[in-house]
Length: 187
Length: 187
DNA sequence: TAAAATAACGAACACTTTGTTCGCTATCGA
DNA sequence: TCGATAGCGAACAAAGTGTTCGTTATTTTA
Image (cartoon, rainbow over all chains, first blue to last red; front, side):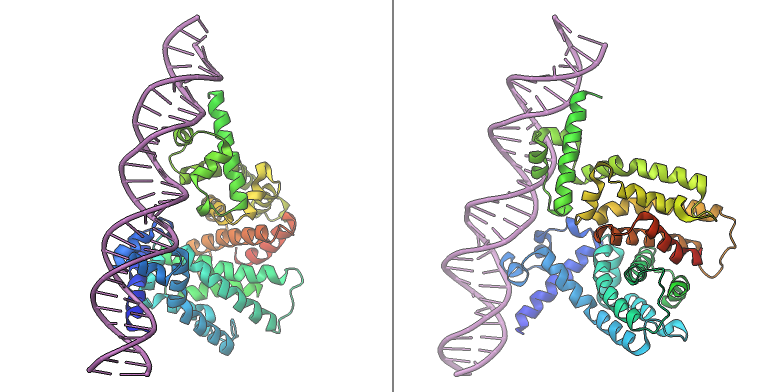
């Protein structure tokens, strides 16, 4: 890709990221992004159709690799192996979040964290669904599969939000232990 | 209150509600609300400062009594009494939602349901916190109180969203049974 | 290295939305 | 009845959106 494009794209992402860390997504204007990124109006619209389009692209950029590695992890170890938790998908994901790659934490601690978490939610849902179905577990006839999948991914997202908003006081391992404790009984 | 004010307020709420049922909150303009409510621009701004202000007021209007009755219910029966589920706070809340008071369902099935659910979340959190603390339960030293409270209210909200978006296929009692099944083990 | 392709730029644009002000009219309550 | 108040419409500046156009700078490729 053209070096100019790369730079522009990076500048816009950086500007948008900075803004997201300090104010709500809905209150950010394209104009602000343009000013912060120091690019021309025309240039912005050459790269992204709308602000929403930019958000999607940013999610891909920031979290795409996390989701990917999450899938690998689930493939290798299963959702929750019978052994200890540290290698669980959830712990893995939390660690990634904490690692603060590319200023993720700044974004997530802002008011717009819900938006980002929705991105994970969808990926998680798919992941859990396939894992839970493939698992040779006693089918709980009381509770529908769908309900369970949603419960797990939903709980995880809510936990992550709680964690992030509270300043990430716990370690990923700690958190994973708690999560395991509340989820395993129903698995 | 002046009869004129009441009518105007009601018209705006109705218009806004109708719009929310069919399109996303963020894509609704004040102009549309004004047109749908058939009131003057000046009048709208005399009643509400912003669109967000209107949203808050609508939440109060629609869900205030539900929250109130929820608190009463929790006070009488406890969060989850030792007896059967039907009189649980959660079931009570679900029933209220389903009852479709004032077109609630229409609003909730729209794209903006998350916004409304956040309103419940906050009320629920308070409620659960006070109930869970006051309860004479064996304090689970593994899992922090805060984590637990967030897990329960978070799970509930996610469940409600899943339910609503899926077209409310299950009865409140059914849903409450599932919820009880996944929550009781950790209580 | 020269030439063609392409990215970025700024200015200008028509358009929408917002939130406010004004003077006027209709309605309410005391 | 009459003063107070709510609503009205027109007009307004300000800010934002998304597009077009001609120009300049950079990169690719021939």
